[in-house]
Amino acid sequence: MVLCVFGASQAQATWQRLDTLIYEGKEYPIFNTMMSDYFVKYPDRNPNDESEGRCSGSWRGYEAEFEVSDNLIYLKDIFSKPCSLRTSALMKVNPDGKKLLVDWYSGFLISVGGENTSDLYSNEFLDSFERYAFFEVKAGKIGQVRQFDNKGYLKFKKLQFEGFKKTERYEELVKRFGNKPRESADSGIYWSFLFDMDRFYF
Image 1 (cartoon, rainbow, N blue to C red):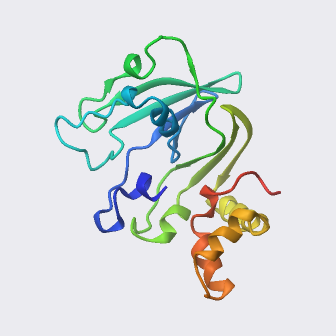
Image 2 (cartoon, one colour):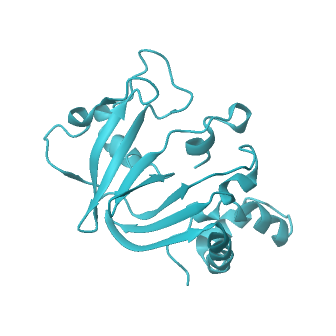
Image 3 (cartoon, one colour):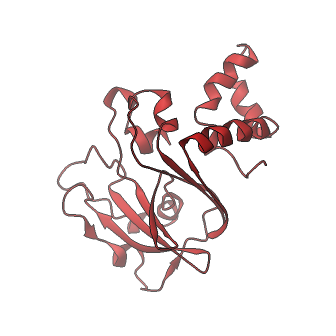
C-alpha cells in the first residue's frame, strides 16, 4: 500500500498512478494492485518496460483498467510506459485474447476521489479525500459496495476498527509494536488497517 501511494519511500514521496475500476459506468481509481499475483504466476507477461528508465510516478511500470460485468471483474486494458506513451500491452498480458477474469483476487478494493488538501507525507492524507468507495471481492466477484463522503468515511473507519480489533490479523500487527502500550499500537495500526481488513464488520 505505501509503495502504491508514495513510491519507494516517504523520503522520495511521489503520488503513484492508480489502476482504474469501471463499475456501473463510473470510473474509480483504486489503490489495490490486482495484477501483482498474476505477474508472479506469469512473469514473462509483465508489461513493465524500463528501456527509457523508471517512471517515478509508476514504480510498477504499468497501469491497468478493469471493468465489472455481471458483478465479475475483468481486465479491460493494461498500459506500459504509463507516464509517457501509455501504450496498450493487453495482448502481451493476455495472449489468448479472451476476456481475462480476475478470479485470483479476493479482498477489498479501496477507491478515493475528490480534493485532498492534506500533506502527502502525513498519515492524515489517506483520511482526507472527499469521497471513498469500498468493494468487497471474492475470487473476482463483487460483493457489497459501500460509498461515503468524508464525514461518513471517518465514522465508518472507527466502526470498522472496533471490528478489526477482534481479528487475528490485528493481534499480529500489535506484536510488531513489542512492549509498547496497546493504545500506542492502536494509534500506529489505525491509519492503514483498512488495507488489512478481510470483511465488513458491521
